Image 1 (cartoon, rainbow, N blue to C red):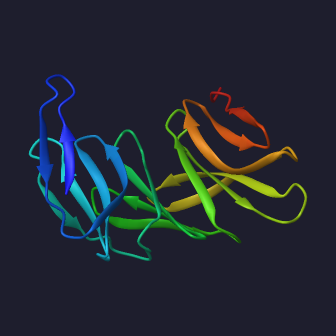
Image 2 (cartoon, helix red, strand yellow):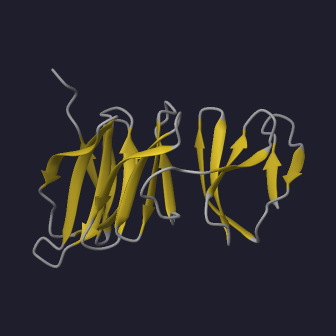
Image 3 (cartoon, rainbow, N blue to C red):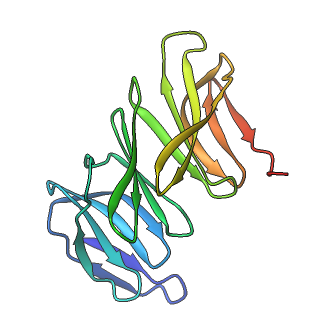
Length: 179
């Protein structure tokens, strides 16, 4: 089961799950997306009713090890191993997919509306960082960022940028607002 706590009152409630292990919880406006092992599809929890329901996705999609959501609720992003899928939330349809050379880390930056991806590459610098625009036509590469030699795989979104893990440090990236 999954325990939900009301922040204001501290009241808690239990949501029964159809599997034995919940992971990859990702909140978006009005919903929480969840991966429930050993099931083969995503589930969604309605934020108001706390009801859990299957959320079948149409298109090339692998059950994710990691989820990230567009804070506006338009897209959900799923990463599994080398695969990244962009899913249109209204239609539950994959609108774009990339396959990286190695396992990938993702983060969606709401300020720039870009999906960030990083993966090991073995060619110096050893980690690649790329930015993709997402729309109804799919994922479009818009930038390959020059990564410092001490950058490693792992990105966390900020507003108009992201933080990348580095060897013994954090690397802060910022996107310039469009002019």
